Every structure is written in C-alpha cells, then in structure tokens.
Image 1 (cartoon, rainbow, N blue to C red):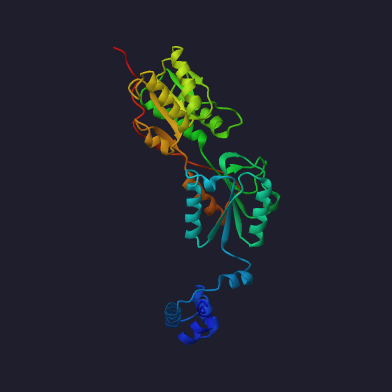
Image 2 (image 1 turned 90 degrees about the horizontal axis):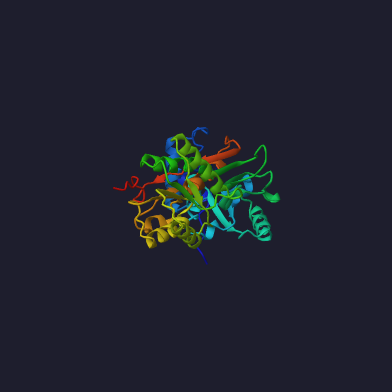
Length: 341
C-alpha cells in the first residue's frame, strides 16, 4: 500500500498552531489574517519536513475551482510543427499554476462532443478551442456561455464573446514585400501559390504583399498558381520557366511551395539568390533544410499558445481578435536583382 500522505492537522500539530492558522499560512493569507512571522515560518518548516501537499481534489470540491484548463483541437496535438502552440499553452498554464488537459478530435464532431462532455464532467475551469489552420469556426454548443479562448481560429459573430488569437498574416505579407523591396527588387516579382478567397492565410498574405509592394511603388508581375505542396509547385514553376518566364523574385505562399520552386529552378539552371530571390512563409523545418537556406516569415505558434492561456486566465481580457506578429527569419535566399552584363 502507498504511504499515507500527511494531513493539514499533522502540519498544524507539528508547528504548534491551530489547523485554521496552518491553512491560512499555506494559502498565503498570513498577512490579512495577522499571523506572526514566527508562526508562519514554523508552519512552512513543518510542511517541508512532512512533505505536505494540499489535497487539490478536496479544495476544488470546496471552492468549485480546479485550476485546470482543457485544450481541445482538431489535429494540432499530433502535428510536430503546430504542436508548438501546445508547448506555449502548457508553459503559460504552468506559469499560472494550472494544469492543462489536451484532447484531439481529428475534426469529428461526435468525438468532439464526447470529449468536451467528459472534460466538463471533470470540472475544468476553462477551455482553449484550437485549430490546425487559421479559419472560421462554430463554437460547439457545450462551450457556449463558458470561459473560452479561441486559438488560431475565429467565429463570424458580429460581437465576439471570447478572445481569438490568430497570426497577423496581413502584416506578414507586408513584411515579405519589404524584404524584397529592401533587396532592391522592383520588377519581375511573382507570387507562387493559389491565394484563394476561402483560404484565410493565402488571402491575407497576398493582400499584405500587394499592400507592401504598392507602398514601394511596385506590384506583383503575376502569380504562378499551384496547390500548396512541393510537387504541384515544382510542376507550375517548371512550366512557367519553360514558357519563357524570367522572374527576379518569387514570393511563395508557404515553405512547401518554396521546396518545389527550388527544385524547378535548380533543374532549369537558375541559381538562388544570384539569378532569382525566393522568400516564403511558415518557417517550418524545410526553411533551414533547403540550400541555400530559405528566408521565411515564421508562424508564431508558441507565442499564440501562450497568449491564449494568458487571456483565458485574465479576468479583464476583452473579447475580440488578437493578432500575433509573425517574425521574419532572414537567411540566404534573398539577394540583389541580377543585372546582366
């Protein structure tokens, strides 16, 4: 049998104080209860010597507060890259003295309802509702009216009822344009990808790029349209080069597109960054693996996870969309425009 855990009464007896005095000291209420410093030190010493730990279950039954948070996601728990959001959430929860439960639904509404119901049965205090991709969501019925922060997603409500933490994709696009402009590019700047209206990241990145280029009195020369994966990007860029396109700078809408772009450029004998500059978004592991290493605008998953929990635990937090900056990771894929001799 496991050893019996020491009780609060045993701590009080060892310290020579009443049980209520020991309770107030261990709850940090020695000042407002006017408990002497000598008594406080005796209680703390007794608790250390007995290796006393409070019964959190009993406390939660009494206070109706469990100091627990549940993070419910579609697939980010099993994605090693987006999983940084979970790391940030965990770190913030620990910093605020809370435990974090993590559940993944794989986008199945039946699984989601059962998971949330089970978590409510365990009396978690609040929820982080998270998405792998930035998108609009409908808050599950079981979470309506409860303490919730949205992570990497938003609701379409005219007056949001909770904070929603998303990456600042428009500013990221603007920053991407500035990197290209500061390198000296004004002409031959092409987007690679498909900035479809229904894809939040693509739509906002493209809008920011156009806005940033316009401020520098430039504009995209065109778009090489493709799906957001290496193979279609390779095929599209290869076809464009074979058709006579000679770009000066390529802004890829994510790192997977950049990988396919590198392959097509290398096959055509086009050198990065001497002949063409390449810039991308996400700052996944691919960005550092490619040669030359890829300049990319980072998705701030860790910071978003941290911010979601901080806002969730802040009683003064206002509902609404919070955009987290996406930092530029400058590497070796952007250079000055090629000038033929």
